[in-house]
Image 1 (cartoon, rainbow, N blue to C red):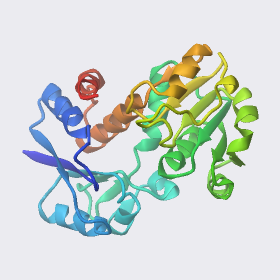
Image 2 (image 1 turned 90 degrees about the horizontal axis):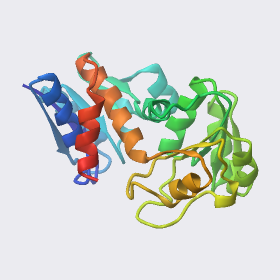
Image 3 (image 1 turned 135 degrees about the vertical axis):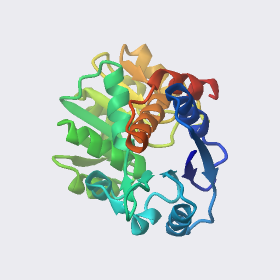
Image 4 (image 1 turned 120 degrees about the vertical axis):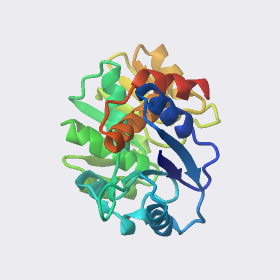
Length: 265
């Protein structure tokens, strides 16, 4: 039996175990998915310990996505993003991937969104970095808006053809955008939106990375404006699908994985 897992701190809230185990069951794969909670600052040591224990693969979440870079050979996209969320121990040293970028793009594409034209990414943290690179690699022009404008400019300097902005420009940016992604935690467990409702319009596709609650204020406002809406559980699903396929070499059964994920929301 193969053992896969997740390292994070805290990690008890994770929805990855039921999602991945539903995939293993559907595909007849003899595997389990477990969680580990190493002390903060010990991400690289946790990867080395997992290798010793013959763990087949690890997902990585906060606060270890940068820590583990010292313990893996990062794939090109993970190296560009500067963060790893998936580790494959089939290689020596283990290979580090970032599937968050594909999680965002596949979530949008699954809802019929054309990844061309202009995108606005709100947030320049870890999720914002991954989303910005994913959309840029899909040939979208990306504008990054962040509360600390300097961080937006710093990220834009790394992402091809991207620009950095403060939040005060969001109205104008969104008015000309085809895709909007909230990559901040605004709206998580609170009825707030990072984007003014009057900036939203019917020609927009809106992905909110927040999935608790599943219907955020941003998504309600976007639906009222006639926009296409994509909730954060789709991004979580498709980063998991990408991870599943990286580890197993098998096409992931997205539907039962999605059912297992949403049953826990």
